[in-house]
Amino acid sequence: MKISEIIEQIEALAPLPLQESFDNSGLQTGDISQEVKGILLCIDVTEAVMDEAVTLGCNLVISHHPLLFKPLRTLTGRNYIERSLIKACKNDIAVYSSHTSLDNAENGVNYHLAEKIGLKKIRILSPKKDSLLKLVTFVPTAFAEPLRSALFKAGAGVIGNYDSCSFNVEGCGTFRAGESANPFVGAVGESHSEPEIRLETVLPAYRKSAVLRALMTSHPYEEPAFDFYRLDNDWIQAGSGAIGELPEPIGEADFLQSLKTVFNLQCLKHSPLTGRKISRVALCGGSGAFLIPEAVAAGADIFITGEARYNDYYDVENRLLLAVIGHHESEISTKELIYKALSSKAADFPIHLSKTDLNPVGYL
Image 1 (cartoon, one colour):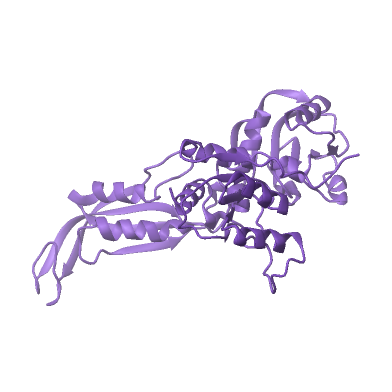
Image 2 (image 1 turned 90 degrees about the vertical axis):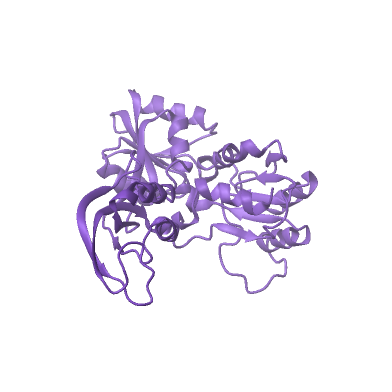
């Protein structure tokens, strides 16, 4: 199996178009046409991780945080990023990073955190905006079902927990084929009326090319009519953070103690206790404090994240409890997610969880 095929599987879980505009998710370096010899999973790419990959015979390193976040003007080995990149190039190791594309995926980092805590009815806290399109096309009645199936297979027609969604109206299409046309129905130079279905369906904007290919391939007409409209609707299948419900309300102190156990924490930071029970929980792995207003608006009793500023502990006031568990600790499950996605291929080559990928923050 080639590295490119592994990347396809990762991007099925965490499509690159889901990443934030500031990010650099995706392939960092390497030849993806290579056959996979072994995979090493980590959060951060460091020199120790690259040495580990060489020792284990891995030619693909999959990290959460991108190795290359800012453009390089030189490559001289002056810092750990450049030295790690040099080692990757010298040893023909490809490096791929998932970062915010995995953060924003429906079943990505934040969903996994919510499941570890035991939340139910999990949903995206802050859905992506300006990310949906509506496709409208017209097809002869007898060909509507095959076309619908092709569009759904290409990624159209998903709304919340429902798929294969479309709206269909019967009507009559008219046209006249020109001299150079090769009409599917009707004759050259003659006006023609055809019973048709107006078919409408929604799709993520990044699926537009795939859905258009499916339309052009499956539609019987030589020149099918279609329109794409940009929607203002939130895309509830993707976005930042997650929110869910605990099976039973629990006291704040007890819940904070359970967080320490679940994430194997030496300590955690939190804002002053509010005296309320914890029932609705919002969270975001990594640096997620920007979502505190959304958590408050959603009626969360607590917001959990990896990092927060000093003033954030004041700003929550008495509206909810803020719990900060550490950046590395909040994203440790990324390795589990990728391993699970690739585990069916583990018989073909080894997949390792890095043992040198350590938390750069120490606790005394």
